[in-house]
Image 1 (cartoon, helix red, strand yellow):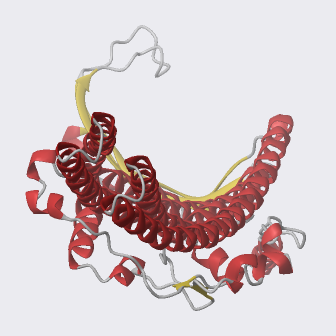
Image 2 (tube, helix red, strand yellow):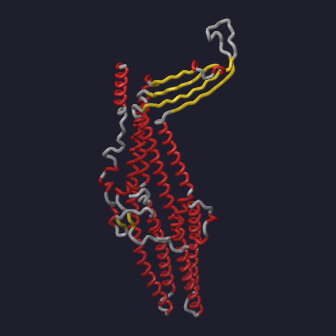
Image 3 (cartoon, one colour):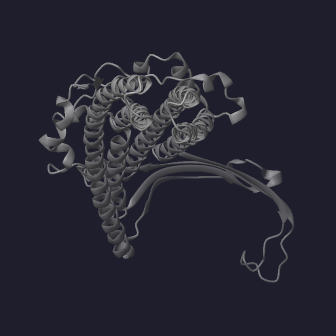
Length: 475
C-alpha cells in the first residue's frame, strides 16, 4: 500500500508540473503602435476653436437636440437588418464559447440494447455443436473527464472568450455605422430641403427682376435682350430644384432602409424638414488614449489578436498526450438472467492518447498559428493607425470647411449689397441691365455655394463622430 501511495503522489506531482507547459502568449509587444506615446496623446487638430478635448458622449447624436433624429436612431438600433446579423453572429460566438467550456466538464454515456440471436460455436470454441438461439441484452453507464494537464483546454476556452469579445466589437462597430448613417441620411434630407427653399427664393427673386425688366422695356428704358438674359438666369436657377428634390427623396429611402422600414412606411412629415440640426457648441473629441479604448474596430482587432495568441497554445497542446480518467459499469447477458450478479462488469482508470509519431504535423500547426498571430498583430497596428488617420483627417477637414463657410458668409453679405446697389442704379437709369444681371448671378452662385458649404459641415460633423467611434464602449 505504501508503494501505491508513493506512486500516486509521484504521479500527482509530475502532472501538476505539466500544467505550466503551455503558458499564455503575451499578445502585445512593447513596440506595438498602441503603446506609442504619440498614439496616446492629444490630436493635432484639437487646438481648433470648434472642438474641445472633453470626453465624447455615449449618445452623441443627442448633441443635435432633435427629437425627430433621436427617434429615428432608436428605430434603427431596434430594427436595422445589419444589426440583427451582428447580434446573431455574437450569439454564435457565445455558443462556441459554451462548446469550448463543455470540454472542462465530465462526459457521460448511457447505452441499452437487446436482440435475438445465436453466437457462432466456432467463436465460442465449441466446434460441431450448435449453440441455442437466445434473447440477449446489454446496458451500461460511463463517465469520463479529460484532465487539462497541459493547459490546452483552457487555451481553447480563452480563445473562444476572445472570439466573443471580437464579435461584440463587430456588433458595436455596426451600431456606430448605423447611427452615423441614420444621422447622415436625416441631415442630408433636411439639407436638401433647406437648399430647395433657398433655390426657390432665388427663383422668385430672379422672377421679380424679370418682371421689373419687362416693365422697364415697356417704358423704353431697356431692350428685349435684357429680358431674355434675366429669364435665362431664372431658368438656370430653377433647374437646380429637380436635382435637390431627387437628393431629398434618395435620403428618405436610405433612412427607411436604415430604420428597417419600407420607403412607403416612412412618415411623410419628415419630407417637410427644411433645416438640418447642427451641433452649435464645440464638438468633444477626447484624445488618442480614449479613442483607442472607445473605437469598436480597435477592440475587435485586439480580441482577434488575443484569440490568435491563445490558439498557439492550443496547437502546442497537440505535442502532449491527452489524459482522461473514466469509469463505467454495465450488465451484459441473456435476457432471462438479466442483471444477475454474474452479468455485471466495471472498469476505472486513466485513458491516454498521444499522437507521438505525428509531431511533424503538430509543429506545422504551431508555426501556422504563430504566423496567424503575426498577421493579427499587423492588422491590429493597422486598425490603430487607421483610426488615428481618420480622426486627424476629419478634424482637419472640419476646421477648413468651417473657415470656408465663414468666408462664404462674408462674401454673401458683400454680394447682397452689390446686387442692391446695382439694382438701384439701374432703376435710376444710371447703368444698363448687364451689371445688374452679373450682380444677381454672383449672388446666386454664392448663395448656392454657401448652402452647399453648410450641408458639407453637417456631413463633416457626422464623419468626425464616426471617426471618433461614436461614443460606444465608453472612454
